[in-house]
Amino acid sequence: MGSEAAKAANAYRQLLKAVKKHIGGERSNRHFRDFITEEFRNNAASVDGPTARRKITLARDYAYYLNSVNRQKELLFSYNIAVDRTDEMKKILTKSASSVGLQLPDVYQP
Image 1 (cartoon, rainbow, N blue to C red):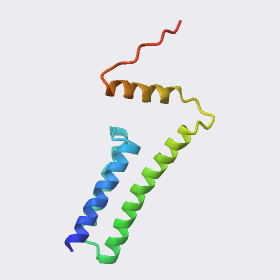
Image 2 (cartoon, rainbow, N blue to C red; image 1 turned 45 degrees about the vertical axis):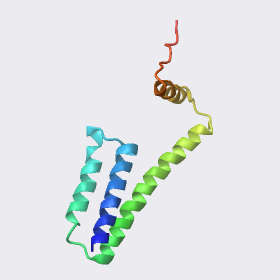
Image 3 (cartoon, rainbow, N blue to C red; image 1 turned 180 degrees about the horizontal axis):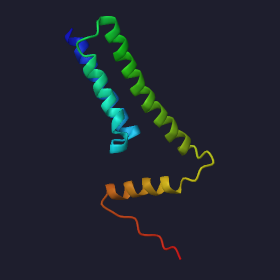
Image 4 (cartoon, rainbow, N blue to C red; image 1 turned 135 degrees about the vertical axis):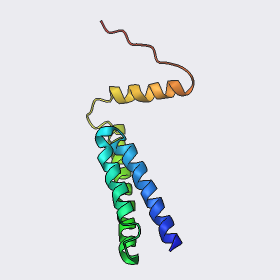
């Protein structure tokens, strides 16, 4: 049963990371994390083997889904699918410049 608990803990961590990264950790989105925590706590001891495996698989699949949707969105932006990417490029350039200790100059706008 120890390996089941380890798998459940791993799925729980993966799901919380995906929710925090892609949905957000702000107070307005806190109900997602609360729901996940509540579901894992409620089903910790009361679920039999096959049902527990199904729920762990569902949690892992949902984390994979969130990561994949975000990755697809990033790829679509990188393919430049008729969207204005100036904000995205500025964010990337700012991050690159700050990683080497520099700052981008402010652009003059009359």
